[in-house]
Length: 118
Image 1: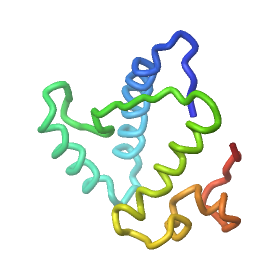
Image 2: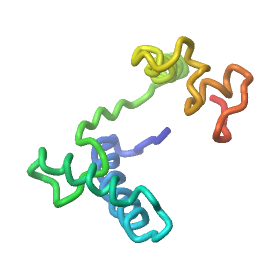
Image 3: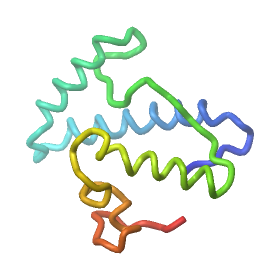
Image 4: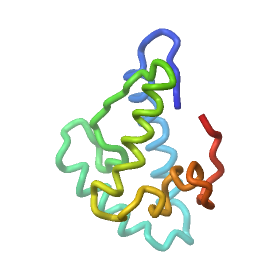
């Protein structure tokens, strides 16, 4: 979760995507032991073709729906929405069945990453 003090959250997200994509692309493509780097490069090149603002590679989607979260109810609502995405996509029956979701931690199950509870 990110907060932008001067109300320019969309600009912050844009700058974050620009900075992190350069670093992540370099790390992926320059790591000899990354076995998927040629496949990933092909995917990044494919998506870059559809956006004139890109260079040769696109890491992030260009959709930017930065939403400022005001208060605990809105935070809970957005977390529920995110946790329901794998269910809506038909990947799992229950949100906590999705291995890559923080909802596992909230359900008392072992997650893949450590979670700071809200």
